[in-house]
Image (cartoon, rainbow, N blue to C red; front, side):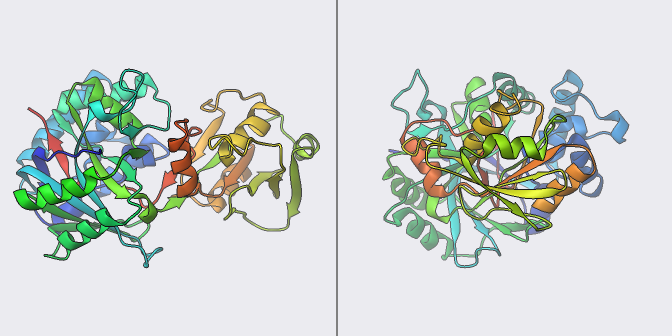
Amino acid sequence: MVNVNPIRRALVPVDSGAAQRLCSPNYDEFQSDREIWDLLQVQPESVLRVTMPHCNASSADEILKDGCPEALAEGAEKMEEMTESDSTKVVENALFLYEIADPGRPEVRQIGLGGMAPTDDIRTEATPDGVIIRNEGIREEKAKGRADLIEATRAIIGTVNLSVDDREGNLLASMKRSCEKRPCDFEALDNEDGSAHRIWVVTDPDEIASLREALAAEPHAYVADGNHRSAAAAMRGTGGFLTVFFPAHTMGLAPYNRLVAAPEVTRETLVNQLSESFDIESLEVSTYQPARVHEIGVYVEGSWLKLSPRLGAYDASNAAQSIDSDIVQRHIFAGILGIEDPRAKELTFVGGNRDAAYLKSEVDAGGHDLAVTLAPVTIEQFIEVCRQNRIMPPKSTWFQPKIRSGLVMALLG
């Protein structure tokens, strides 16, 4: 049984105008601190001034070290300002409904149920029967950094994206009925992909009970995005973490590509050493972004290769080893380039908000030596890894569109 509890004190924008000024992409969607600083120059009310306070500097040269005491103090100050501003209000004992209207998928209605999920429900070695299943390893220092920010700001801002099977569609139907009763309380547009993000704040006790009952019919939930954010809340003993539960079949996935620093690599070496395990095709194209799993693009020495793993290149019965990013890690990064650590500094992970042309330009400019493009992981692959109780390869799933940060926040204390 999957549980969600109302947020005791939810901080929300007062209207759609305030929502647009406050909300932003999550901190981990940016490639650099400079990108965050640039956004804050044009959107000074952005919640990034709280979630990435070291970037809230007078100039780019004054950006602080992430997590330093001065940055945490800045985050606490900006959180207090945001709480007391005319742009926000506090709503007590509330769930919320979160709809993402994706122009790229007009036929899909993606609605999720938001609130506080119990940290004790996360499956760990200490809680093997937990119903919330993580599928990615946790880096202690990264989770601690988020936990320190929770402590400093006395708030949970980062939202964890959880998926549930909802095979019969009952949860989605229940949420649709609630949404159709009235207009949303506020909405904001993502200027990058054009998606609309709509929030309905739910405070009616009967409606809350009905939505919680629909979710409780689900046996498990899977962490789609936000493993470290859930771990941070658990570290600080908040008892719960801010989350949205989406029916899995409504969620979209985008490519998660790689840039690689490997100055010794040559096209000839790759072709020769991969030919036993892959079918290899030279492509006469400017850019190549695979659309189907088990089709892999490699840009090296000014041209593209298409790789298709043969039988035996991976264990088809192992859902995690069947993911293309794991196949690439084993055969190319570790097998040829000697990069054993899938999170090594030589690897730069590029999410779905950057296309293959961006990767090509980075290699052509000399910042990296090759690019690897991968098809999006399918939702079926993602859920099968969770069902097998395995760990997803690092940086393999990029859910798109992503939840916007700052539309609903949980105040502590």
